[in-house]
Length: 115
Length: 267
Image (cartoon, rainbow over all chains, first blue to last red; front, side, top):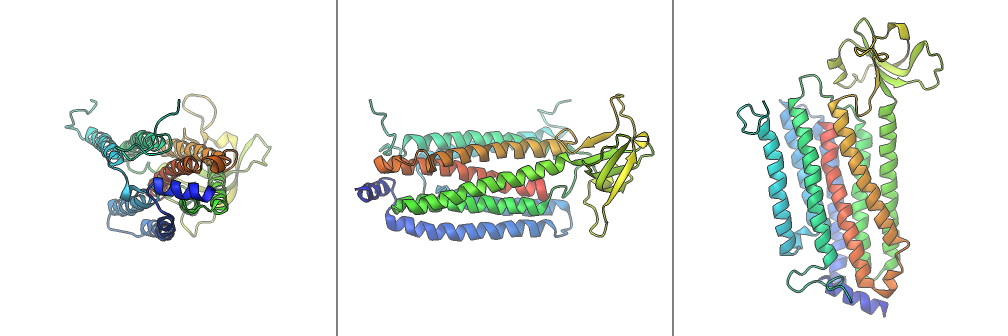
């Protein structure tokens, strides 16, 4: 009975048992990639690039890649519903705006600069 | 009356209520952490040269915590997939490891916080600065005692990690040699709490808020894993949904740490 219900649940959520098995392999690969990414982040932070800004950019690129892996595979964003993408689209727009306005406020000619 | 779409997805959106709810909540969380990251950028970019510390925190412990959180995230999705395969025992095992990872993360973080609260900076009247870990065994109030400290000439020297060959040594400083505070309230003795510098204020706020999320997420995962597990027998579909929702929150917590680690520990 329980098995029948679970099969039903799996199908209802859009995932079959076979799919779940396949997902587990993917999760393991993504997990290893994230661990490698962590090692790379630490290693790259000790490399003496010409300027400190390059270290920052490299670290943020690696972190963004890792974040994309977590969001894409663990949070299933690579196969999510349109409404979720819409919500996230708005979020990214406003979050980017927040950072942009902060950066903009630091320039002397900024319209939102506090004098 | 039964609440519609509490378990089965709505036909037009393809989402059940809780899934829509958690994504809206996560959107608000992105804005919360986005505001704090913006504050970090503002403080960092506007910091005077030689006032922002580099590699002040223990990189090994930070990296270890990153690995622990990644492992916990893998366990969460393994647990969810196990339920999809009707393997409840495997799910219990995987989520058990997740809870252990959460506990490990919090223990390491607590150790790091304790380390910072025991880390002191003492300014002498002649301009010399001593920086190191306090000797808690010292009972002589005429001296400030360090277990291990380094001596520098300026604050700027403190912004760089000690050279590898430098040996930190115990130090006992007479209180009479320590500079008085400008406001007349005691001596220039301060630990590395959030009041010490902009960097540490940002560090404690960001990691403290993140740790609260870890605690909250772990409590929810524990509740679903333990006391609420009987739902699996009566309504497995709803139970899987709960595991998925708690998992989404947990992955978000992991995702925030992925940015916190390089920003606070390495750059």
